[in-house]
Length: 21
Image 1 (spheres, rainbow, N blue to C red):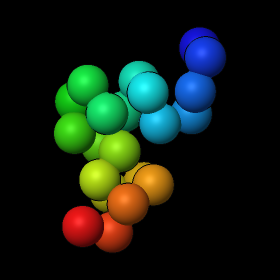
Image 2 (cartoon, one colour):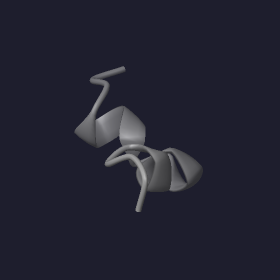
Image 3 (tube, rainbow, N blue to C red):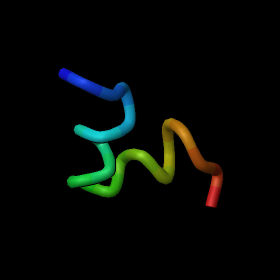
Image 4 (tube, rainbow, N blue to C red):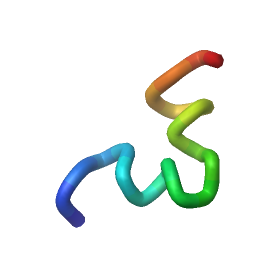
């Protein structure tokens, strides 16, 4: 894993974990 949000960004989880929007 490179970034803690890169993986979630693929599934759209980044918007929930990292970004509130």
